[in-house]
Amino acid sequence: MNTENSLPQFAICILEEQTQLTLTDLCRACAVHAERIIELVDVGVLEPLGREPARWRFGGASLHRARMALRLQRDLDIDLAGAALALELLDEIESLRSRLRALGGEY
Amino acid sequence: MEFKDYYKIIGVARDATQDEIKRSYRKLARKYHPDVSKEADAEARFKELGEAYEVLKDAEKRVAYDQLGANWKGGEEFRPPPDWNAGFEFSGGDGADYSDFFASLFGKDFRAGGAGRASFRAKGEDHHAKVLIDLEDTYQGATRTITLRVPGVDAQGHGVTRERVLNVTIPKGIREGQHIRLGGQGSAGMGEGTAGDLYLQVEFRAHPLYRVDGRDLYLDLPVAPWEAALGATVKVPTLGGIVELKIPEGSGSGRKLRLKGRGIPGDPPGDCYVILVIALPPADTEAAKDFYRKMAQELNFNPRAKMGV
Image (cartoon, rainbow over all chains, first blue to last red; front, side, top):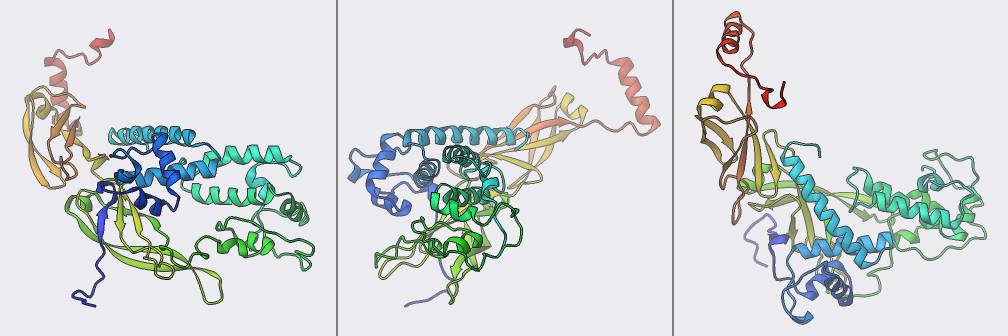
């Protein structure tokens, strides 16, 4: 193998700025079957580009959202619609907290 | 090892019904779920809760646990009784990471985790960790040495924690909450399978000057009363260096001025909002006091005029 550099070189990227994740990528990263990801698209947790599952392209932020929704569903024994609602409310809380911090408040 | 009071952890009495245990568990699980809770020890609390529920929801395990007696206190030094486990056989479990106390009572097999062992060729597990960086690191991009504590298993099969040191390039313009993906830096794959990936979630260390909202920065800038009243050009520290800012005549405290493109880099870059804070010169000399008295006489000013007093 050709080792030009003594330091290991990692392929680094910002996950959220990737926009080309396929259904297979997402399944692999979340360690679930495709049906689970399709359910997440059905309840609106994930919004891929492209018409049919084989052509879907997900943004990088989808990975984190999918994992979170699946964890909430599994750990709290709620359905996916409930997990979707929780996710939306958590997003809203996070953006409010961020605003509050910026304005110099608590959090 | 420490005794764990599973009833106390779930918050029920020792004679609680299965329904009461389930209700209390669910309520606390929602409260301490690491994705929901902002409390620092949420993850540990949630894990402990899961372990307690694993025992108390299962009739057999609960009976076995109850046999230890009611006199134990949480945190007390514990050794399983010599005749422990006689007549009990436990099965199931989902491979979660349980405590030594749990393992000593219900066996170590629970820890091993069944997933992935069967398939010979599987991609390695992805790893997730948080990384704390300075705001300056995202402005310029930086290389940071990061130490991760990785759970592993030693030659005797005991769970151990290894330290792993990585040199990580922080990409310029990364924002709070985003993830750096390091391909192939997770667990090794099984057989021919490729290694998993490592995801680092970025958090910013609190900065002495700037507050962050997405790509935008907020800075409180002290100004003298005459700078605010008469207008002035003053120096402002930004991440990219000192810039000059024109303060318009007649500015009040709290006025927000925008330095376009002076926030976190990106396409488009964020802005830096400067919030004016009027700083009063101290009246600590006779001359300064005279000056304030003169202002009081000559400026016909009632700061509470709008309150009607």
